[in-house]
Length: 165
Length: 201
Image 1 (cartoon, each protein chain N blue to C red):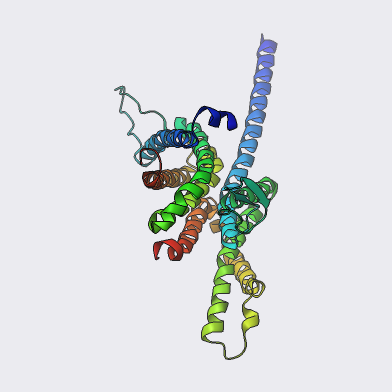
Image 2: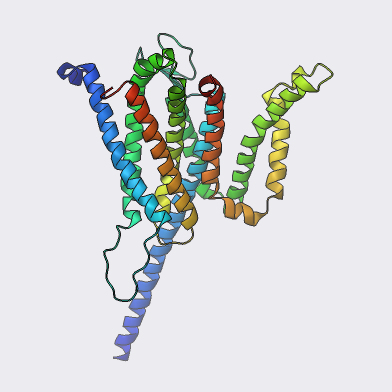
């Protein structure tokens, strides 16, 4: 940490970290949204010998989503230190209570998603099995909602004091 | 020629039994991991919600000083952070529970899940009910009822009754549904706790 801070200013370092967090969030958002769309609106089967471009199988995103979600949670936990001291205190002083409250809920939302990752990964190991079809679908939808909520609230908090604010 | 065919058949039987054996062991491993993963997915949000509500962090992080203190510590220089402590404690506890789960019979596992979830819902409800009784209805000095341990009695009895009367088939079918019910319920409880300090301020 000291080596990094000897190369660049501290706020520059945190802004770079925040930007990486944002870039990974966009990737995670895209992957989980595609998977949710695939799971809620599965592609219709092609009739006869008529060939068509097949969609990317939804199961192929699973490992990527689980790994990126975990990395994002860890990065978020790291950046949270700076948020707690540098962002939240002025937010409270300026009476942005809704933003603080939404961010507090984001912590819980991310945590709930984190706990579901092993089950989510397990359900997608046999994507064709009908046994867990329903729970697989709704766990994926729940994870997607967690990611979307976290993204929107994180973006609002960033607008208060973050990259480009 | 016949002998060769017989031998070939025996080899293919051996192959298929080996393959079947390997598949069975893979399935067993898969189902054991499945039990672990599902139990973890239920236990983690449940315990996280409980620890957050009771404010039981494994450690407190002081961001200004950059130091960790065991368990819950008051604010020193700058604000204390409990979130990491809740997550780590919930993850460790859920991990232990999930490691035990594959060695418990499926029937008992599903019954225990129903019991634990019912208990988690009933315990605070019983405490709230007792507090409401003390304030609104009690005509005697009922302050001794304002205790988590007194509330535990109706909560345990209620959870046991629910577990007893829930049909085995329903408990089996609903087991994976707890994966969604528990985190959503937890978020409702945690979200409600944020209403007064932030959203209705």
